[in-house]
Length: 253
Ligand code: PGA
Image (tube, rainbow, N blue to C red):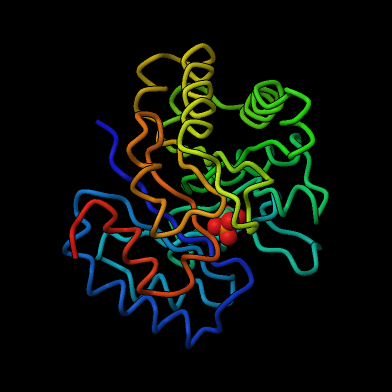
């Protein structure tokens, strides 16, 4: 019932020209991607150009962040409506780099999620524990708090517009991937928590992605876990061939 979901988070990489060249290559692959969700999240400057190339292909374009207000005197910020108008259907919210480098807390992330859904955007909601929290045995408690606080305002009908990305902070950009067993354990916990908070049906339909040093070499074993539905991929999504291998993780060359 759940489709594989492969998402590339380009962070602060790629000029408009580079992003468009990648999107054109991705467009060629679109006919092979009908049974899965494929998404790229370019920087704001390249959003509309990438969305334009991908229009009608079924491949999604996402923003990496938004401001929670509809408009206003917020120099340097971008609203949900602006992102939707640029042709995006998704936005990443709560990435650990936003949490740690830009001071975003659970309450702010919750308001951003509400703003995104209000403009018809779907949300990739990122959660995950630090190494210190994992070593202190706090992984479940941290993930539970992030889910409960971040999704506080959401009702059951909102959940179908949501994707959760579990990204242990210690695995992001470090080359240190969670083992498939570690990922599965937390994904299963998140799904059961969503079942308790909303409903079993909503939880069963929810895509839960793993993120943190996903590469072509470890994608298939992560995807083999029953509760791992996809990947949110940073570094290894920047090179087209590498990303294409992960999109087609279950197909032979
Ligand atoms: P990484 O980043 O794949 O480079 O570890 C993942 C992410 O931050 O979404």
